[in-house]
Length: 499
Image (cartoon, rainbow, N blue to C red):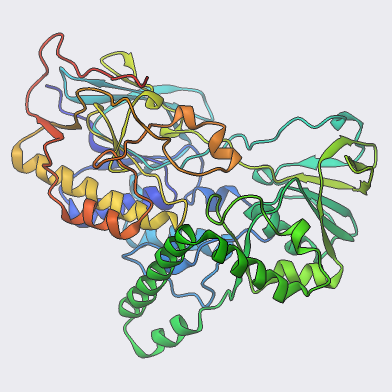
């Protein structure tokens, strides 16, 4: 049995990866770990995205780590502030020295005989490849491709004389002063860009095929700022964190129980902001129920302020084609534009695009079951961080890291070299990885693991349920199998296929 080069190899140095490292240091301090980061900096999403107004769409008391209080005045924070928070965390806990930058993991093969992962990485600047071994593989690189955002092909693009760009690849030198801007999309990115670009642009139009639910809340959390003045920082942070988690879960639950009432409430709030004369039915009334797709958060009603000022507008229509000077809509209306921003979404990817195999047999996550939202059926010593769709990402990331540490510690107690959620037979009835109708999820759900209706193969979008399952319930549940010796020839785990 091979002694690995490192105990835990973490992919990604964003929120998830830095959090995973700190949890390892706190809860499994004897474990050696390395972090491979494909980019040249810490921060992940919050270092990659640099478009105007980039900010969180979750409050920082739940998007922040459970072990490091958020102390800035604004709870709905901008990208640079979040990037600083992640970097400060890495430096405070000495994580940076464990990071190897500009290193992309290409492939990982688990050897049952050696009980290790052989991980092939590539230096993104030189193309040089190398291999190291790790006992445990912890994928914390998020859920979308960093090198390519999603952009459909629009008819007549070549005819447009202006500039077309995607928010994921924002040009640092872009000057949109006095320009007419059309932002295609109705998600969080579009709703961030539109009010932010009104500072310099002549006019900004948000062009959407269909509306999205929008809710406004103050960027500053007065209660949080007050509590920090009278209580120790961690106490104040924990109180607000719990308050916000409970409100999120309550609101989500009530929305699912009574979608019509939630719909009326959300649309009523928009109507209060924009007034009765605005066409709420056309521009802000989705065809789906609340939380079938993620709600868009508008801090301090900035989008509504921009619309009321006349500096921005919304068009709900379909694109006929691009023209030399803008976009022609199906209705016959033409939107003039100097710059077109395609805020059309992300390209999702599971397991960070790594080619994973077991004893040389390729692992297809689309043919496996999710285990507790952390691991995959019949795949040993590997965890994947995937946050909530209905709450802050880091809430689930923290729980995932805690569970991994518990698992590693139990393996040490048992003298085990591997742990694997074993599935003897793939069930006939399965469900998609997430119950979400957003296009960016639907396009790739066949590449994500399935889930079952029963634990532990059920993916819960509920913090309190996950908190119990991952933090409190015994790890030895009759499903998790431990190995202390090399697998016998021909006895490698079967990768059960979905029907």
